[in-house]
Length: 100
Image 1: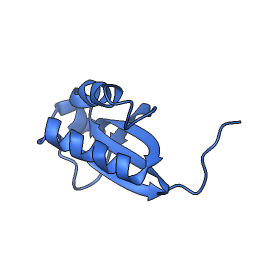
Image 2: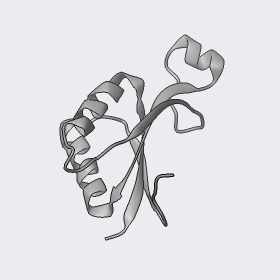
Image 3: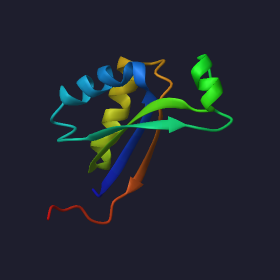
């Protein structure tokens, strides 16, 4: 099965729990990268006054590459662990993975 890139976009208040979940399953995720991003657009709910002034909301982005079946298992695990996570994701094919 081919590798895919799983990208998770999630509220910062659940980032640590999602990261801990991924770290607890090295059989599914051998590693990942996370960073802060800012959500923009009509589907983003601005709640805090600072968000309304800035026009965006802070989010955490987590990326991981692996076999598609395992990345789908990761999604199912997160859905089971955090059913109301308000998490956005996508999977895209990866043509090559390596280390230089």
